[in-house]
Image (cartoon, rainbow, N blue to C red; front, side, top):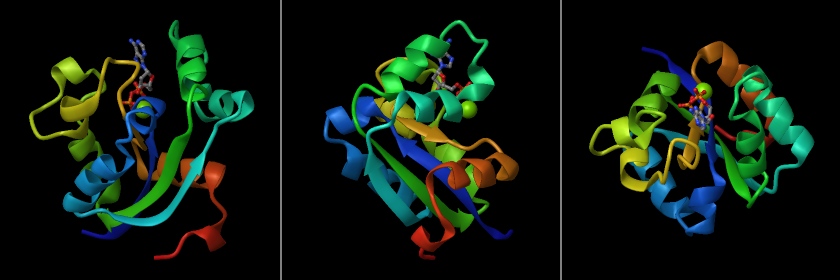
Length: 140
Ligand code: DAT
Ligand code: MG
């Protein structure tokens, strides 16, 4: 299996509860390396642009407001099969359905306030990384 990259966001419900370190520890223990990281307060334009694929969903407005509500930590993660590895440690979107030992099972508050974002494919990982990082900010 190849070493690849994925994109992660530690969401406002987690930064608000001072869980940046706790979440990052779970990512690292799952075999992912943080090769870029920055704390930002998303603008409306960033939140709407990032989640444009969900623009027609009924929860879109709520999702955008939530992502702008507090700072987030955007990260590039590297590891063997990074996209799947990250999705596995994140757990299901709805924390009520997340497996034991996953980040969302441990920390998510609801389907909306679910602690972490992770890319769902290598192709989307590239796009999402490019949305927030320049190549020279990523130090592998
Ligand atoms: P994931 O974040 O697991 O990739 P997704 O891409 O389907 O899930 O949705 C993106 C985010 O939108 C998700 O993390 C939280 C929010 N969301 C999804 N479904 C929702 C729903 N039914 N109600 C409220 N928010 C929802
Ligand atoms: Mg998704």
